[in-house]
Image 1 (tube, rainbow, N blue to C red):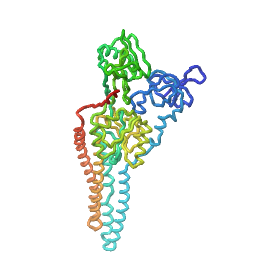
Image 2: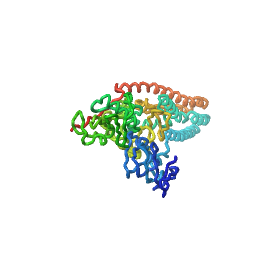
Image 3: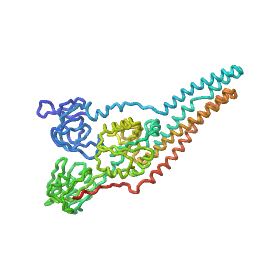
Image 4: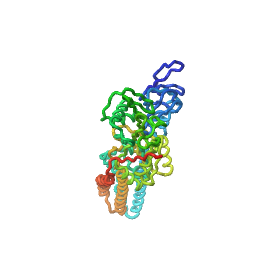
Length: 527
């Protein structure tokens, strides 16, 4: 990736260099819609930075001259000049991705248990064979060799070793058929041991496919709506585009005047009518008052608002809110039965009240969490002995996903690359997460039953072998039958679990609210 750097000692001469050639003290130009490659200080221009890639926060952040700008954001308000504070290798975003957690290995708990049982099983069988042979050498040497051979043949650890891979492999296929794609089969084992589930908010609990916009204030006349729509059409600000998309059915016309103050608002003039659209500080001057309250306008913090004033009269505001996925309350209720729930969000706490209505009382909420904060929080839970599942939406949660015992990405498009995760779930199946977690626990139960069944089978066979009642040729026939029986048992058991997943999904969906989307707006503070 190349970046525009100002040549030292020149009068504005530019050169294109690779981002990894940037050094502390370099001055770079960032044009509209370009990514910021390194941490730096804003020297010139007005910065309106979209940090959704890094934090998940949907609303662009305004930066003033002298403030620090971190790598990973996208400039959205014209050209700016930045003084580089750190080279790319030491930037905030690179330090997160270079965290040691991204190079960690993974091991399957049940694979380890299987290996341990197999080793001990082998030692035990050899010991039993030698002891039984020694005994029969003293009693009847004619059958001592048959006893030794029968013990070694009938007792085989293969059945034990097959239990876990067959069960987990079948469950991996079943989950894939249900649009829940796991990277490896051992992730199912890890899911079964989870006791804490951590959710990202933006892009995970909320959907990016639709905006929820509500108007609060005095109804606008048709002329005012036309002027509003025409003015929004001329702006490239993300909030303006979203609002215009909702209002574009109104007629539009060419404005006589249009001005835009980056990061503040826009003004449109048509004939004798003027409209101001933007922040309260931009449209809500001291002399403005609401036509329906007669009082001075007060901001409602924690919400994304676009305020409207026409001809020096405040009208109201459009409030932007996240659209939550359906079935969230039922999902949280089911998961909370056996797990602790934590919400980590890069957004502000403007929707805390709404989330608290959805969540169980025991759930914890943390806002304004940067990616490295999320990673550190997951690590702190693990130091407390917690087994943590992180559910996020991909890139900006990569550190937390990698640090967690199980990292699951919720994706609107499952073909998109999602780093550091253990599994990808189609967003349409998000409400089925509790069913998948329950089935993981049941799959581990199948493995344990298979272990017990295999051990009993071997003990019965050994009983006949050490007493001299089992011929080697018969043992040779019975030995593979133990492996076949385990394969048949795990196959039938997982098939049964696969049929149960439909019942679990039906149970979860029956708890969903009849409303597809429920948005709660806090009332505007009164004087």
